[in-house]
Length: 140
Image 1 (cartoon, rainbow, N blue to C red):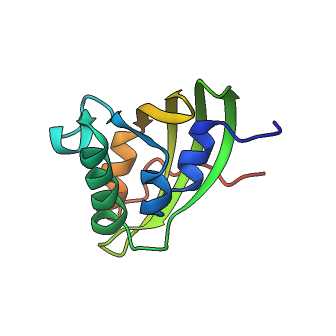
Image 2 (cartoon, rainbow, N blue to C red; image 1 turned 45 degrees about the vertical axis):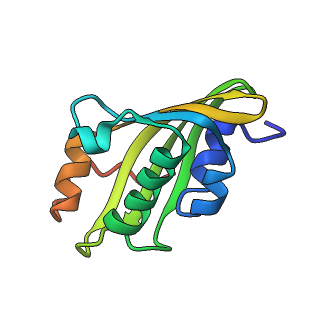
């Protein structure tokens, strides 16, 4: 793939709050699995709400600067794209975090207007508690 899709650009910017904010439309929405708590699942609606959600994730859940992503699959184009990836970080509780995600992104005029992020929520919850449940196998 010559140019990264919008979904890939988003995950490659994880942790960089200014870069993420610059990718959004004013009416952007972001949601996660419906089974998660409403303050996490969303939907987070509007640029201010999405940016506040991003800030909470990357400063309250994970040690700043610890986030890395490994892209497993990427499909789509400028208007609609999806990336499957492994999200790695150190939680604020001092536990390693290593969970597989899928992120869908839709754009309007080159800016992201919709994000749907899906993850192994059991693995996420367990790993935040320090339990190595659902850790993806190492890349070969």
